[in-house]
View 1 (cartoon, one colour):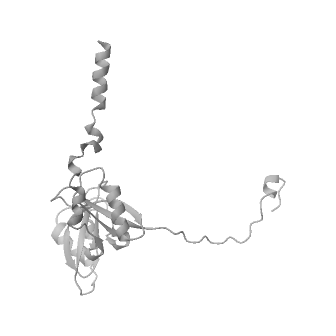
View 2 (cartoon, rainbow, N blue to C red):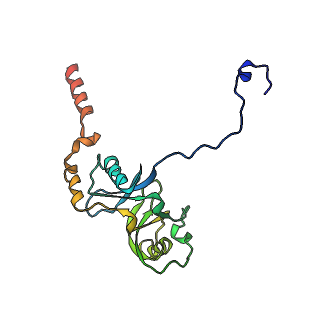
View 3 (cartoon, one colour):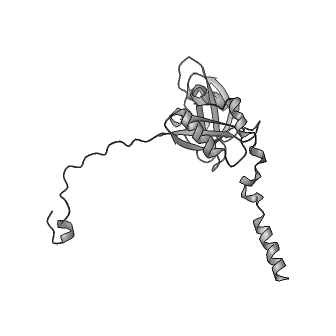
Length: 199
């Protein structure tokens, strides 16, 4: 490269640009949390981990320390089958196209996004031969007459559930009020102190 600018002439000559090697990155796992017994599971976010067990441990550390929780489960992001996203008043179930799937039935957990800006909520489970068939069955069971913006289907065999023995971890969570900032009355105490100082 010819230039009168000495900064440019000092630059090394660019040879052939080689592609970068793929980075050694962990995959993502989706995390679902049940806040109270009897409430549905809700999608909380994802964690990066080398495998399902480590994802479960990281999910417990990340998503269940602050608020009440009775159970958590994780699954590989690649095992979450996602419907097309709908716009406006059209339901995501209406965008599904019937496609004959395999005959072997499996159990799929169905999640629905009922409000924009919120998380996917567990609607129930269905027996189907494929994720698409599961979503079509879920339309009749869980989506009749309402607008659902997105649907997820997850094969139950691909989920790392919390066992009954592991649920002991969260027994003390409801008592730990110090985790919520709203339980600290610092602002009120400061106002009381300032009032006393004035008088």
